[in-house]
Length: 193
Image (tube, rainbow, N blue to C red):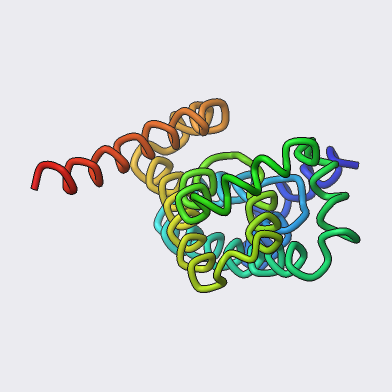
């Protein structure tokens, strides 16, 4: 079944309906769907590099709105929907510890982990369960998801097809380096200036 969904997404990426499909894939991936929107975003940007920023915007908006749905699952329907989703992703056993960290560092965890291939739906559900202030959640989600999708779009826009394999195999490395540089910049500004 997963292979069929993946194949459908790849076929859809080349169609005229691709932007709509990208929005909905980004939306549902943020609350329960297992395949990340990058599967569509990468071929779409490579096919029409001039629209890279538009496609990254669509993925960001869909993902953030879907994140709000994930937040609602955690807030209102954790036992019925949230726990089974977390079990599916192998995160149920470590959830209590993660929720405790989330209570202390929620915005930063959401920004940093939300940029990586870590399942974003785990973050959105956790934010709802821990009752993270919704405005903070939305702002952190916009920052995290925009940084994620615009980084992918930028790399593809500037380097094209040769960077595709690198992104697909090393997205975690790329986003980790980006986060380290970003956090180092904030630390430098705080302590140097």
